Length: 372
Image (cartoon, rainbow, N blue to C red; front, side, top):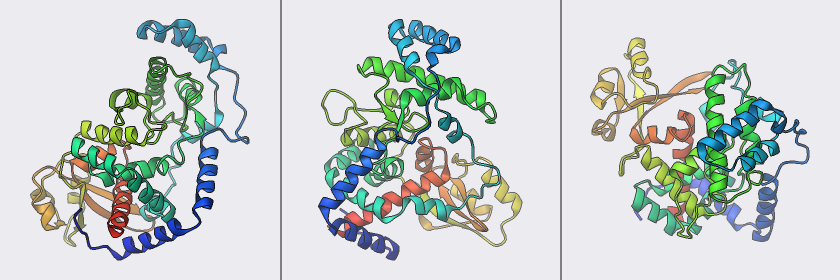
């Protein structure tokens, strides 16, 4: 493996992670089991579910249509609809952040780049190094990017969600909050995901009431929605089935496959550092930010509009996107994203998310290198 000079910050994280790893392993295993146990089933203090969707004519009619369209057993589908419950807490969680919310990259970053998560990432990398290397060779996605996604999503399988996926998807399919600015579009999305989930369960002979996930219905180590599971998940451990809930190998291969299918370019960095020249105009900034995170400019145009780029960015042959993140009351920060940065945002459409994935993966990679 190539040797890197460790940044001071990365080294401090590695030292703290080493402290965690050197602590009482029996206690660590006990705490991990407690955390997994608490994340794998609904909390006892969770609010009571409303009556079943079997009492809703609209939901049952939808179920009959799905059974016919998907060639599923109608009685089985209607039983699943009857078993589904409306969860009021999910309706609250899906609402957008208030407009007064002030974005702060440093605060967001600190949620994910913290010693416990980095230590878990180091352990996960060591336990699955050969699988990560195989996925990188097959799909072209670096190990540290896969590590970053699995760390941000579930802390490497530690917190995979506490809601029944059936309840989450049904709640959002039939009772999506009407005050949401994109309520109709989002409700249609969740009806499609519920349909995909029922198809997935029948195909894999799973009982729909048994799978747990996030309040939005995402599942497993990588938090795949049902449609992503069906389209992009792979059997990477070769046991003849795809299991994102219990197979780290399947999770690793599936994340790498997902990114490749969304345009990941082998050997290309995900982002380059960038700053604005003092003379850069507001009009230039507006022009560069207009496409959001879609790579739309070559390096020469970015430079002509006031961006200061390093040699690697200037030599980049593809399109780039200007990425702006806010820092509370301080000035915003900037970077330029490549097609690979854009591919990460197909997983979660947020620049903050993509940067957290990249930087968490880099920190864990530096810790792995430091221990070689």
